[in-house]
Image (cartoon, rainbow, N blue to C red; front, side, top):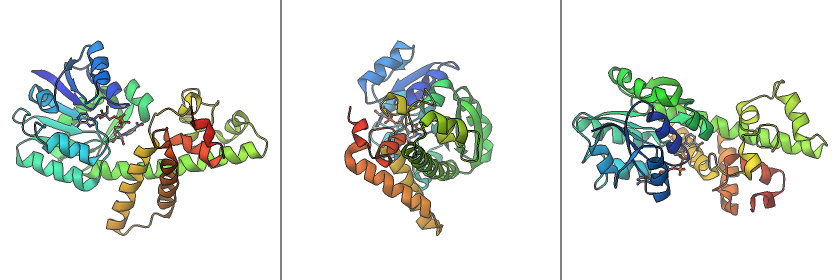
Length: 300
Ligand code: NAD
């Protein structure tokens, strides 16, 4: 029996699983052979299916693209629910819609598992560095068990409320992230047209009232933040089509709740355009190239 199963070894999950492995043995699964080889190379055991991984661990962590993947991996044939050990703790860190998170949690509970939705904020660098913020939706009694599992991957683990509350917090956070990324990209594109170079504008705005995370941690203009995707041809990172997914989730949640989110709607339209132009696989900060009128910078 392993301490942990980790399913979904993509941009985020690969780094997270590595950090989790510092706290115990990990059996890992992904559909990608390349991802499995990389996991093996750092000492994890590979499984041949999600069910096989889940059957051999006390705690299962998943990090998958979207709601349908989560449903398939938990509820599908040879999935987690049919194979996990009695009473196992199941934690889904993917960003998905609140309703699916609650549905999966409901089935988990009815089958005797403890479940938490625990989406993250922080990006690929924070995933690799064990510095993610986890927003947890779980029963109050379960939080003391969930928190220590997430801590090797975290700078903060915060309970947002009951099942689904982690996803609600994440959707609101990412709508705000999209809005300030687009605002930051617009400002850098304008600064350039007005004759300021990116570093000059960064030096001023990063210590002025325009300062925000998209600027100082993930600058969409090449130069000022050496680790940002802008310096690597906008390779993700956080893919624009993932951001579009999150904005759609925010719009759906807003419509259901009767909330007005006009800037979230604008951000969704801009990311839909960027995706429609064929750049959904690029980092979400690549929207800077569209706003600055140089999409060709992404064609390499
Ligand atoms: P990704 O596409 O890089 O990784 C997803 C992984 O899941 C892939 O390796 C894929 O092969 C695997 N997968 C898909 N279906 C599977 C299945 N049925 N069984 C096993 N593996 C399967 O995505 P990512 O960027 O790592 O994002 C994962 C989640 O984290 C998303 O919900 C995303 O919205 C969220 N997120 C991403 C970031 C970021 O910066 N990339 C930040 C915060 C949250």
